[in-house]
Length: 343
Image 1 (tube, rainbow, N blue to C red):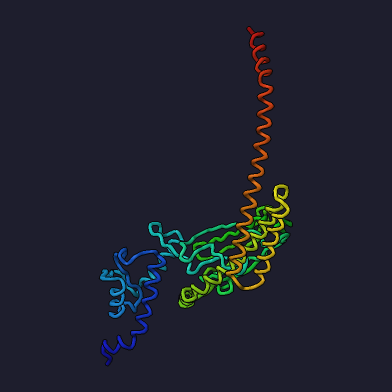
Image 2 (spheres, rainbow, N blue to C red):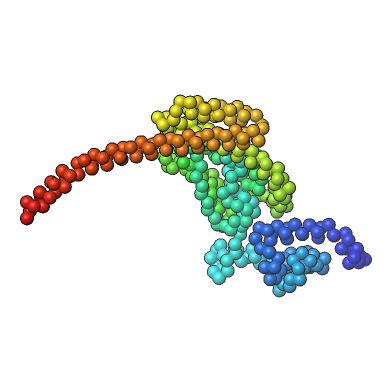
């Protein structure tokens, strides 16, 4: 026969695998160990003394609640949920959550989350996006789930295309993307052009058949690569910001063309070209530096243009005041005369 010491030695690696899920649950729930009052153990393996000792060790001397039969707990919960869905159970509410974050791929291959992991379902979230290039007539919506920063590192659930977007400068069209998750975890994703009300949608399964082990692996993979993903995302965002600022600066130059000196305009154009040339390479410190230089120059020109416009307005107002002052005696006589006539 096997002694408990021998059994604990053999199963030690398996029991220790409970530590990460314990910590993850606390982190996801945004709770501290001190805020836990009782621990309910579910599943036949929780009868093992080593498992109970581990829980006590990790969560402190918390009282383990053994009032629930660990072998029947899951089946009991499923039966209650079935009763709730049928409308037979009214006084109990069971909340489910999304196992992984849900979102779409955006400019530069970034995974933009709309529904965060562990969001209570049913849930709904909408966000406004726009086009990345001028006269873009369609947008591709790639629906993803996962925890990584880049789209390519997450699981693709489905794709669809919204077409018929009227020609317009980039950033003008308003595309509303909406995620709806029902109580069964079924995800409906829609994209609507707010200008034309043209709409397209897709329905996918939130879990997409992933096992609990696969979900945990994806979460752990995201944690392991968090620093690398952060750097990659920051670089993509930097490029996107630089491209957008170049576009905005050229629009500003066009709108302020009557207020900007030719030399100032040429100086800005030169700095734009420097930034565009730098964007062709991978020197991100240089990109950041060139972007900062352009931002400063653009701000200075904008300030000068507004100051010039303000001075012009002041001169016009002064001219109007002078005219009014010269005319006011006559106006006062007219008013007095009318008043005297009424007497």
